[in-house]
Amino acid sequence: MRILLQLSLLFALTLIGEAISAVLPFTFPGTLIAMFLLLLLLGTGVIKEHHLEGTADFLLRYMAMFFVPPSVEIIENLELLRSSWLPLVFISAVSLVTTFFITAKAVEITDRIIKRRNAE
Amino acid sequence: MKELITTNPLFGITLTILCYKAGMVIGKKTGKAICNPFLITVLIIIAILFIFDIPFSAYEEGGVFINLFLGPVTAVLAYSIYRQRETVKAHFVSILAGTIAGSISAVAVILLLASLLGLDDTLSASLVPKSVTTPIAIAISEAIGGVKSLTVTSLILTGVLGNMFAPFMIKLFRIKSRIAQGVAIGTASHVIGTSKAMELGEDIGAISGIALSFTGIITAIISLLFL
Image 1 (cartoon, rainbow over the protein chains, first blue to last red):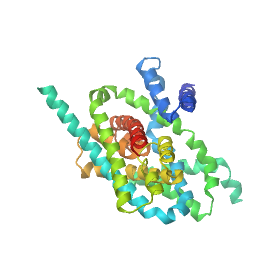
Image 2 (cartoon, rainbow over the protein chains, first blue to last red; image 1 turned 90 degrees about the vertical axis):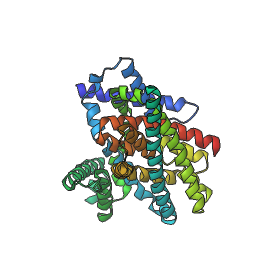
Image 3 (tube, chains in turn yellow, purple; image 1 turned 45 degrees about the vertical axis):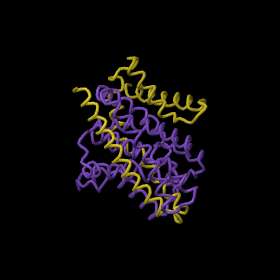
Image 4 (cartoon, each protein chain N blue to C red; image 1 turned 180 degrees about the vertical axis):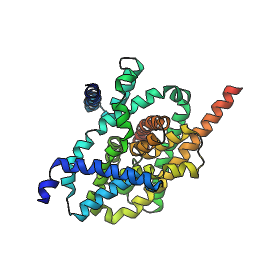
């Protein structure tokens, strides 16, 4: 019973997120709206952490599995990739590494500045 | 007989879950980061579809049911963010700074490489939003003259590579701070990378989840204003 309620809550939130997304004048994913809605509900105490226990832990633990079908779909674009796969793979890989590095360093440097400022 | 089985949605669902289980077992047995469970799962399924000559459309009959969970799986990141709220609050400025720096550098590096390689405008516009979550990426791509399928392909590729190499990059760049690890994963490789972040620890996963949503917004603003 608990799991059913938890699942319906999560699906209902996603549905509301998608509905809001559809009427927004700009593009913002319904799934992220649902995420912010759930954060708001948890923050205001309408939904308690233990209300989601179990189902949330399950979904988060096996999160990667749900991205398998869209990833397998790459094979549908093999024709398209034939002509431009090399620059596409190269740019995807290089920018992944540079973005990762710059982001991590920016966080570490900002953290250090804040810490120093707090210490003064 | 084959069609009878493969065109049933249950085929795609069963294949996905079984292969993911197999991927997890192989990943754990070998203990090597290169044997990434997610990548193994995708490769096994692609191999099975090729070997048995099963069209992707048959697999997708079941795949769509798994896809339906993408919404709840993303929304439920809020649960982790809420549980890690003290950490998130304490490092909010750093998280924001990291996602801004990361989003700007991603767009800059992609445009720079594209012009160095002499790519046409359509291809480079398709690549620009590839670090962000799918719906935002498609919207950006279409707005600046990219092609949806190219964007989605490079986006998935980035996510898979991020999922695979995140632990390597953390070691390579000696990123000790778990906050920095989470922000870097979410900013560089959106939600597919975040699923790896979640495996590394709930705090890293929660921060990665926040970072990916910020990155989507910031990248959209940058691309629509400057490109």
